[in-house]
Length: 229
Image 1 (cartoon, rainbow, N blue to C red):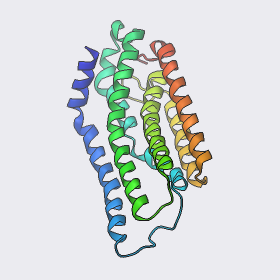
Image 2 (cartoon, helix red, strand yellow):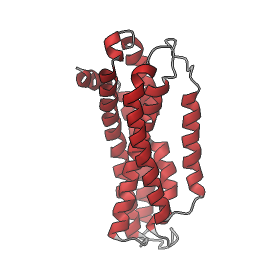
Image 3 (cartoon, rainbow, N blue to C red):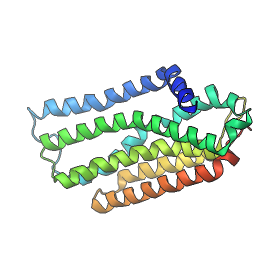
Image 4 (cartoon, one colour):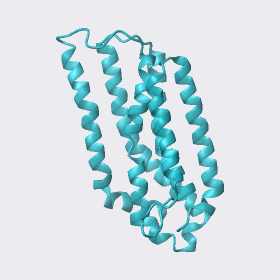
């Protein structure tokens, strides 16, 4: 029944999800279309560069495009604040099942956005003769996909491990803000790092390790930490 429950939740709150997605689609498509049109009139709009050099700003861009933080707050306010009163909902298997279903659903929404980003940057790279090989193009797109999944997981992980809200819907646990601030700082810091294969591989290693560790911690600890305060 948890799959059906979460399906109902996302359907009933689709405006909460679809409205920010529509805004983000516009943010992605408008600059892409503008750069594409300008390529017919101005050949040097973008300076010559390699594809990997473009990755650092896209780390920060995917952080801004992600919709998971808003969705997690809605989950508590409109679902979990009521169901957490029941013991069956706090069972280890129930918590991890809900976590997995929600992660998959949020990842699909975020993957739609990152797919648009990948298509846009692939088009711009071709039009403006940005240096790339098919291997580097696939690595670039794969890194963006992993980053998108990382951001989907991160907010759910923090929500289930620290559960920052009380029944009055006030935020009582400061760790949510602290960890989100750290992630923001790291993403912003990436803007000042020169993009390269080393940076790309480093991002992949860190995000894949985080995904594995966060998933394990939710399985091991969330049944103790995910409760009303």
